Image (cartoon, rainbow, N blue to C red; front, top):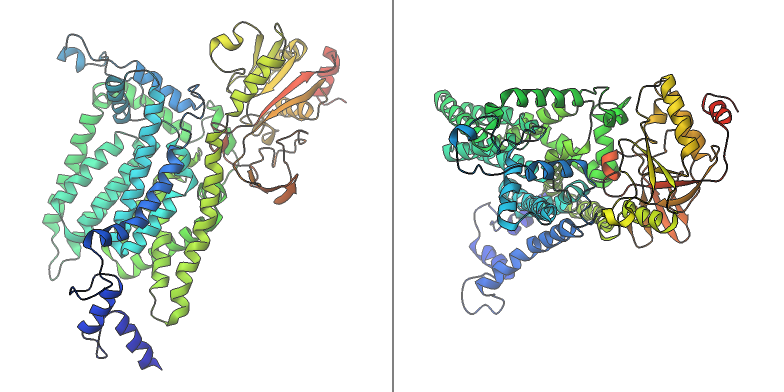
Amino acid sequence: MGLHRRSRAWRRRGLSGDGTRDTRCNSMLVSEEGGGAGASNPLRLPASLRRLHRALPLVAVLLVAGGLRFAGLDWDRGLLFHPDERRILMVVAGLRWPEPWDWSLVLSPRSPLNPRFFAYGSFPLYILHALRELLGAERLYLAGRALSAGLSLATVVALYGIGSRLQGRRAGLLAAAFLAVSVLPVQLAHFGTVDSLLVLLCTLVVWALIEVAQTGSLRAGVAGGVLLGLALATKTSALPLAVTLWVAWATWAVQARPLPRLWRGLAGLATSAAAAAVTFVVAMPYALIDWFRFATALAQEAAMAEGSPRVPYVLQYVGTVPYLYQLVELARWSLGLPLCLVALAGLAWLTWRGVGHRRPEDVVILAWVWPYFLAVGAFHAKFMRYMAPLVPWLCLAAALLLVHMGERPQGTRWRRTGPVLAGAVLAPTLVFALAFTGIYLRPHPWVVASEWLCGTVPAGATLLIETWDQPLPAGPPEVCAGRYRVVSLDLYAPEESTKLEALLDALQEADYVILASQRQYATVPRLPERYPLASAYYRLLLGERLGFRLVHVTSSYPRLGPLVFVDEPLAGTGLPCPVGEGCWCAGVASWREGELVVHLGRTDESYSVYDHPRALIFKREASLSREQLRALLTGGT
């Protein structure tokens, strides 16, 4: 029986019974694929049709990826609700060419080409500046988002090339398909920020370094160095790629037999490093020219990453477990549970194979994935966009594992398991991606809430909004210009006696209380020792005990037909669930008015606050005295 199985396996690969090439069997196989020699074969297809047939799967993957990424790019009607995107466009608007050109000015910190902003690198800022010069300043945000979507699509193409090189066309297609339908790249493609560019550059660097480790190509080494310089000029978090660069050249140098090629490896490493340094200086010159401002910005970013108390928007990560938090968020929404589990299994298998067999390509991939994850995963600030550069490699690991399972020679069961499991992973991930993309095809919740405010709230009313969140109503100035009196309340402020008095003043003045998003009411109550007053305020407000009643809820959860994916920000806060349409607070999955609601629990702010926040608007229904409010807020009943 074993001989029969071996014979069948050889025949499938075009080998004769003794393991030599069987040209007769091979020609039959080629004929079945439409490519046999001889004009007498009636099944033969023209070469152009054969190429088209081979290209169709990749074209289908790219069409899906492009549709998900380019759908609804004007999702906020140009109001720029993403704070990083808004800041980038403001910086780009301040860049200009010196007139007349003056090298002494250009090479000084006073240069009008100096962005004076180094939270991100200068390379993407100059790209947007060039787009503004070519297309004009009108609707530059759309050009930035289209560029982001196009770069994300290019990463899908690059991953196809990497997978095809490593394990064949099937692996490339599957890896590209997984990346095409992953939610995190789809979301980042809708923001005119640096993340899509960073992911593409990091992916291309590792691709070039794989060739370095396999062949020692100096051309690939220089290309990898140039791409590394551009990645660092996009965001300094790409610095772990320097480790990958060293590992790639070291791997190639020591694998030679009988003698290692250490000197050639060192020369190649030095050339690649020099290419990276020169490219970085050219793409981000003011990092050296305005070095003090650059160093200060790096120190501020490091303090934010380490959880500086002066940065309120990282308070959401207090008490979270490094590494575990990122893995849970990857499984919950960035990749989805099926793809995340297979990707982690693939990464474990790739690590085992890389350590055991020391294949150059495996070593290079692992030299990027693990140093980056260990470095960035330890940050206090755990924004999921920090994990974006690893997503292509997780998708590739999943694809390589599944294709490997399908190619195992031990019987047909293993060969069938890989394709079946691939479909079982791809289908729900695509459903989730389609549901998520739907939020960009519907009006933004802040736009809907603003329209409700402008159409319902009478002129002269006092609106209580929160500092550190989007002021509502939002929109063109002429919509509600000068109609309302706005009072802003900073609930992140230290809990002192002045904060209580300011809160009492605001509650007595306000006619409406607006919680534009879950940014604060989902975080502050989880820190009751630090914010006892603010925690009590949110508990009483959501419980409608401060004289205000919830009158409007606006949300836009990912949905596809009757299927709704809900991220509930109140999970773990102990706050009462607001009663209103668009609020779901309990359960894992439930039916509600003909909809199947899948509860994702509390998720990272970056998942929802920018593009589909939940806005709550409360209206005054009763006037409580100052002493009554004081008693409630300080623990009285």
